Every structure is written in structure tokens, then in C-alpha cells.
Image (cartoon, rainbow, N blue to C red; front, side, top):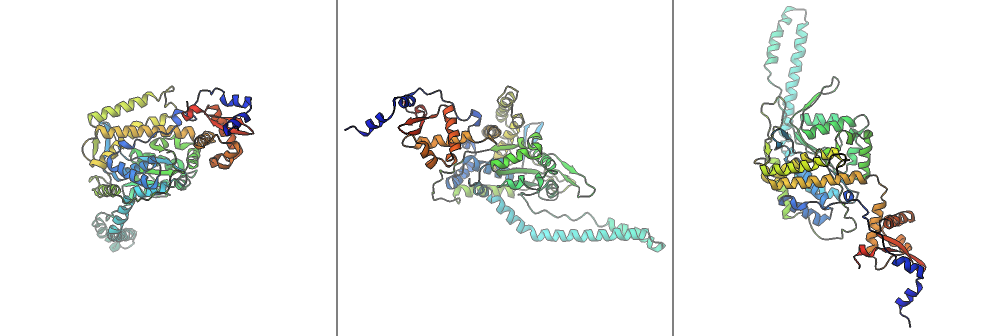
Length: 516
């Protein structure tokens, strides 16, 4: 009796068997090199950050790059007020970082974000509680001072306009009392390190009158992109203000009908997490102003590959020794005295010490700067990303400085190891920015094809068209999407449809499987 294999072979018509055994075309990757995600250089992070990121990932199983970016944003917020960085003696600037992380709903981005920044939020809450009583007393003293001043000014005005001489003579006495009041009592601001739904006017006032080191921080970036600051009439002012804060330059707004403000000596971090569709809205807002005015180029972009579908339950905790060390170090940094300029005519104007680069660190930074610059021409790899490339050197120096202050504090010079980390991380984010602009807004056929190929590789035999619709990846269970994905795989020589008896099956290229 013929065995099953023989019967199966007889059932295959000669033409069908020939199609199955036909030569395969040369395989092409579904994604171009610049569209493929690279491994995040986690090994270059200082141990205190690397261990904390590893423990959060071990428990939550989020993409490592997502957690690492949350850690970097947290470190930026904790260190930015304590030091500036000098790439060269004439190129000195803040170390604050802007990060934009793209992740879909369900990626556990909020869990990662909250855990990495927990110590800062706890410090803020405790500091505000401890200062609140004194803060209220200071406000009362200022209110009393203001009331007295207003009363004296009103009395002087009345006396000047009085008809009787004896009342006019009181002006000198009133003026002396006014001069003797002294300066307005100071009200020390309560720390506010996290802002989310704001607009340019509110943000500038809060920063001028409040804590000098703060952030625009949201694990749901749609609240920012869809907020008041991004309205049609406000978006250009809002993004320009955020640009000014990243640069560390002064900002003055004079208004006759609103409160005038002057920002000087402020440090700012931005940490935004959002879905890809929200990024599309940000790119389209204000006729593309977010790209045109350099706003997005000031961000370190990340779009990590999702881990959803692989996160099988495992016991664990985010209360580990490594995370306790991380929390303690962040608290120590926040407890350091702020380097305030004692001669400034505005309250709490930061004047941080400047961290220079060691000679070896500078040589590594210069090499990276020159390499990127050479790719910015029209024929270069970054010819379509000149805005991001032009700021890559600045990003690398800032990252290295943040890591230096995290580990060593705001003193000394930045060494070559941390500059190497700064360069590699900046280069990784530059690649991610290129991926983002290459992939955002696409119809997703290549992604569908990639998912189908991975699934077919795990099947014990070539799956039928019917089986793909029933049990394949959910994204290709509609006939139209399935067929488009198969056409993409066929075009790239990675798989093709063959007929076997009465069924059509998806055969993966044996070379792709690694089969001789």
C-alpha cells in the first residue's frame, strides 16, 4: 500500500509541482536599511541607569528602547538645572533633552514612564508639602505689602489733587512712607517640575514666576497635540517658545492688556509619548510648522518595535535594589542647591557651572560632528533629514553631559566613555527619526507582510489561503489585506503561492528559512 507521502506526491499535478520547485528570485528585504529598527545601545548607559532600565523591562516587558528613553528624560529633568555643557569654549548651552517616543496603546508606556520618574514626583510632592506653610505666609506678607503700597499711592494722588494746602503738604510724609517700605517681599515658588496641558501664555507666566527647572511631560501626547497650545492661533507661538527654552535663550513678552513676562535662566525638558496617528497630526498641524521651525529637530525620536504578543506572564516587581539606587540618586540630585545667579534682577535665575569636554571626549565628538555633516549634502544619507542632522552634535554633547551629572555630579570634565555613549545614542535617535519620516502615514502593507511571514515561518507546513484568514495574524484576516501582503512577499522573493491538490498554499522561500 502506498504511504501517505506517495499519495500526496501523486496528487500534485506536474505543472503545480514545477511551480513549487521553480527557481526563486533574489530576495529583497521588506524594509530598506533606514526603515529597519536598530538595537538600542543599552550597554553604553552608565550602570545605575542600565540596571534600572533592565529591571523595569524584566517586569513590564516593554521595548527596552522605550524604557531607556523614559530613563534618559528623567535624568535630564533631574540634572538640567545643575550644569551646562561646553562643546567648545564658544559653544556653551543647556543639557536639557527633548524626547518623543512613539508607541501604540497597550505598550505599557505609562507604566514605564511613571516608574522611571517616580522619585522626582515623590520629591516634588514632599517638597511642596514641607514648604506650603512658609509659602502661604510669604504670600500674606506680599499681599499686605501690596495693600499698603496701593493705599499710599492712592493717598498721595488724593493729596496732590486736594484744594487745601495742609492736605497737599502731606505728600512729603506719604512719599517718605512709600520710600521706606523697602522691596516687595519674596515669595519662594513651590516646585512644579511637570506640565502637560498648557499654552504659550500660561507656560511663560508659570516659568517666569515659578520653579526655574521644569518640563513638558505627557505619557499621552494627544493631550499636548490636541491641547490649547496647539490650536490654530497659538501653535506657532507655542512651538517657538519651546524652541527658545531648549536653546536656553532669554524670552521677553511685552503686553499692554496681559501680564508681561521675562524668562531668563530657565531649564526645560520635554518628554512626550504618543501613538503614530498623533504624530501624524503633529506633523500636519499649522501647515507643517513643527518641522519647518525646527521644533521636531530638537527632539530625540524613538519608535521601538512593539513587544505585544510576546509578553507572557512572569512574576516580578519594580521594587528592586537597582531601582532603589536609581530613586536615591535622583533624589540626591534634586536636593542639590540650585546654582542661582545672586546678581540677577529677576527671581531664581539659574547660572549653572559649565562642564567642559576632555580632549579625548572632544575628539570623539568632533569625529561624530564631521561624519554627520558630510552626510547632510544632497547626495548624503541625511540629505532629507538636514534639520535633525544639524543638531545631532548638540544632542550627543547634551546626552553625555546628562549622564556625567547623573554619575559624577556637576563638576569635572566629560570623559570619552560617556561621550561615546552620547554619540551612539544620538546616532540611534537620528536613525529613528529617519525611520519615522519614512514610515509614518504609510498604508502598512510591508508591516502586514512582515507579520504574515513571521507567522508562516512558525507553521508546521505551508498554510493554505483559508487557514491564513482563519488563524493568521489578525491584521491579515481580511482577504484584501491578506492578498496585498502576499503580493508584497512575492515581489520581494520571500514567499509565493503554490497549488497543492485543490488548495493554494503560501510557501516561504527555503533560503529565507535557512533550508538548503
